[in-house]
Length: 115
Image 1 (tube, rainbow, N blue to C red):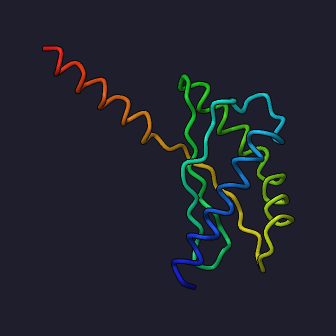
Image 2: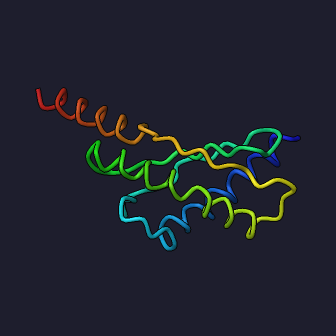
């Protein structure tokens, strides 16, 4: 399968899952400050690795991840209904710390410039 098609599928799933997290997932553990950073779809379209970023404490991040993992079935069902594919990919949620890492680097650079 072409990488262009995989990236298009990833972007469609990213839009859909972002919308689902913001509007339809009712789990109170899921933080409102959750954003989908990237979606990687395997070549056989069986799995979608969804990288999320949560602004907040480490406990809020783990709670959000647990809430999303418990609503995997709902999210997979919605992906299957909204996107016409032969196989509906199984969502795999992972925390993405790139935004936190970027903020930390910015703070370090600001501290260096102050000195």
